[in-house]
Image (cartoon, rainbow, N blue to C red; front, side, top):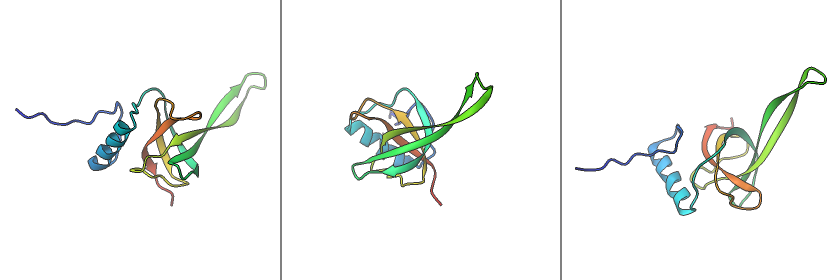
Length: 115
């Protein structure tokens, strides 16, 4: 009886199986477990030390004026070497344990490339 290896990250990733295995291996080496919140955003800045900054827009209702207001959220994320997302790419990020003072999210998938 042989055991089949399944990859269960708790959500679906649309990437080749080899890339997913590479991502899982890198997360395991860094002792990172995916948990908590998940966001989609656009990379606006990239650092040489496997870091990036992503942003996304959201709409808030202001009861006083009975109108909606646009706001932008911005977070720093870990950019694994197997994914290596570039500025302008739309990515999916998932929360992990804190990796530094400001970084506690990791990129798990590029949803749309920069054209």
